[in-house]
Image (tube, rainbow, N blue to C red; front, side, top):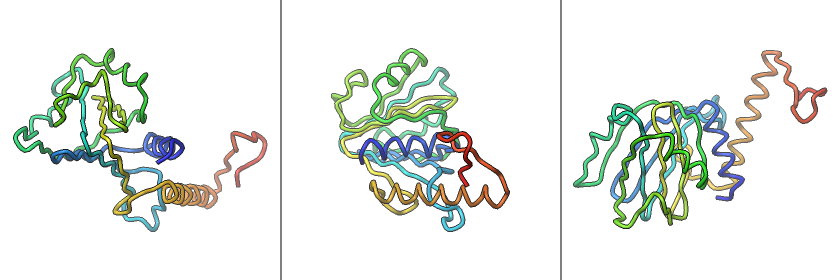
Length: 194
């Protein structure tokens, strides 16, 4: 995916998105988010977006209080496996942002690294892709050399992501029009969008 698509994913999750689940199975890491601003709620049963990282994948948890990351107690180190469901509000999400990563080292007292790559170093990430996610309780850095996105069961590319985003905007505009809510276009302050 290109950087424009990654920026779009940041936008559709940050507004109302909730981080719902984490699954680590050997060298694959899955993150699932709900209530993302993609698709049309009338026609899509759920508005879920999933990330998959693989090929030398890693995940690092940053936290101040061990109770904020208590689900890590369920991690099976022998089989490198965890499957946890929870609901955490996404405060901020960024792709490939080393400056934002550096804030985690100062804002959080503790970190926990989970990776099958023995040479992995969070201070020297050599993976092709990574995402940084911050909630009220904790922050994570997740990455790998392969990154895929899924909306419900559909694997996303740049074009399908754009189409789903357009569906959401049309739904949103029709919703506002039905309720007679007048919106101003921030680019043209005196003209309404509808």
